[in-house]
Structure formats: structure tokens, C-alpha cells
Length: 290
Image: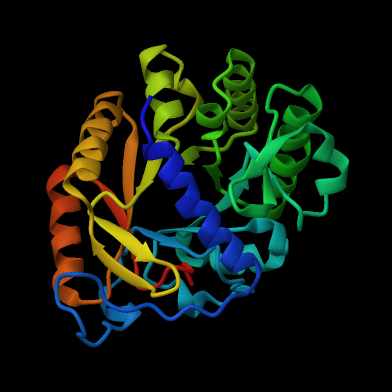
């Protein structure tokens, strides 16, 4: 066991909480060239992935024109809006938290009895007991089905780290059941983070339940949410993630990186790194993923 998943979950929850409170975040450039003017998004973003869970696009195709696949929170969209976003063959993935429940969700009261505990310092988010059949059926037969009806192409699954926090066999098996059920609905699944869960799936030959991973902060890191600065990733953390991603690639899964940068030089470094290894990528110039 290691601390990487725990630090990753702290990153995700801090960002998502900020998003859902509609915090306005201004981000400075990271590490390589401090103070350099930000590169316009249309000039420097990837053509592979776009992650837009921090903003509701309402079918605004102009914001996603450079991307082949995008991630949104489909609970905030209509089928008509998603249809517009899919123009030109673009794939739309929906954010889906399978291991936690947030107080702002409409179904919170229905499932709060299955809460395992709070995130440290984040009272609006709770880990959820994935072993509960009712929770599994809700994710598969209600949320996933609603996404399918709206025209969502795939799922961007978050919070499988519940198994890191509550390291029990029934929690792991509950996650497997949810992912299998969603796959049966016809969804490709990308796991966001979840390195401990993913590694165990590969080790136990149960990696059939997902198609790929997106790993945050392999090359870069957020050094402060209040100061909104980026820096190069620590050598030890980068080494850990690189070894982990080699296992994922060997298992035949797709890999995408989610990195943070403002300058063209730092973006180019990330792009070259990913192209050399056959990774997809999304480079955000702000923590809020807008």
C-alpha cells in the first residue's frame, strides 16, 4: 500500500468541491517559465481529450472543437445538448463517481445511510459502501441507463479509491459489480486515478472491467489551491506513476495523462513525453478544468 491514491483523492475532491461551489479560480504558470503569458487554449490544447467537469457547456461546440473525446457531468445536460457536443464524431464521456456520494446530488438522502465516512476536511463528500446491492443497482440501472438515453458514449469513473480507504473484499467486489454492469450497458470505461484499485485488478486478472485510465499529475503537480500555482512533479511520485503506467500499458489498456501547464514550453514537454509513449493527454491551464 502507498500514499499516492490518498494524495490523489485529496486533489480530486478539492477540485470538484471548488467546482461545485462555483469558485472562480485564476491559475498561474507552472515551473518551467514563471510569469510567462498564458498560451490561448485554442493554440495549445490537445486534440485527444478535453475535460470539462468544471463548467456546463450547454451544447457550446466552440469550446470543444479541438477535442476528439470530452468529459462532462452528464447529469447536468439534456440529450439535445449532448447531441450538439457529439457533432463531427466527437465522443462524450460522463463523469461518474462510483465510490462516493456528494450532498449536493439529488439522490444523496436516498443513499446517505450507506456512507462510510467523510473525506478529511470535506464535509460535502462521503465515501459510500459499494458492497450495497441497492447502490450498485442505482449506478447501473438508473444513472448509467440515463446517460445511455442521453447519448453518452462512455464513462469516466471516479472514486474507485474507496477501496484504498476501506480495504475490504466486499468493497472491491462491489466496485467490480458496478463496472461490469456498466460495461454490459455498452459503455467503454476510463478510470480516473484509482491506481491501487487498477493495479489489483491487473494482478488478479480482473481488468476486464475497464478499458483505460486517466492519471493526473504524473509530470506536473498543483502546489496550492489558494496560490493556484503549478510545478514539476516530485521525482519519487513521478517514478511511482511511471512504473504504474507501465503495468497498465502492458495489460493492454489505454492511457491518458491529465496535466497542468500555462506556457508553451511546458506544454510541449508534456506533449513530447506522451507521444513518445503512445499516451493520450489533456493539458489544462486551470485547476477548475474549465
